[in-house]
Image (tube, rainbow, N blue to C red; front, top):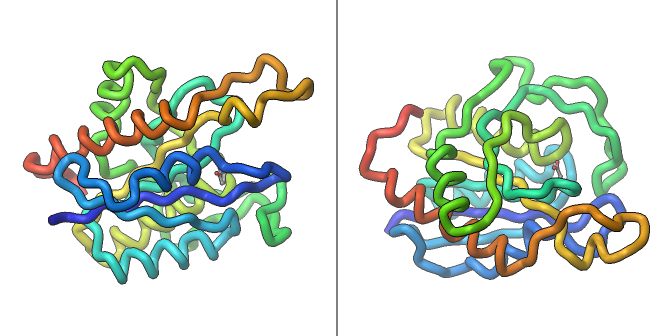
Length: 212
Ligand code: PCA
């Protein structure tokens, strides 16, 4: 059976949880959309995040790799369409790195489109009754770096692997304080359902040749 590797990040910027890993961890070992789902937690650290994902790709040989990350303040599941060749950190990662105004790959193109059926994924999540939208920017922090580096690795090695990224809102517990009063959040089980539906949409698309 084809494997689908999906990762979540560890907490960063002073948070005690990261909704991405909180949700992703429930999917480990599940069979969804014809895929055997494999999950891993990734550190919110520039370069290390991708190095670890690369080792998981080499070990599991997945057909699909999806990164999931927290997008604090977002009011919906954000299915990312485009990875960009740029990092410009507004805060430190979990090892104190804060690269500014830098390329991710000197020899890489400015952008790579995600190679998963992002439009249909967002549509199916909405049909499930969960807010979702397409996003043209995964930011300029560790998530975008992981997204871009994974696409760059797959494209430059001609690997038959599809790559995507999904950002998820804060959990309710992360906004349950005065400082964040009124900020949007999404329950863990809702995020799990959204990810499940998104993976099913990829499975439906598998038989259709997909531009690599
Ligand atoms: N979100 C951050 C990095 C880790 C995470 O969960 C981002 O959007 O770049």
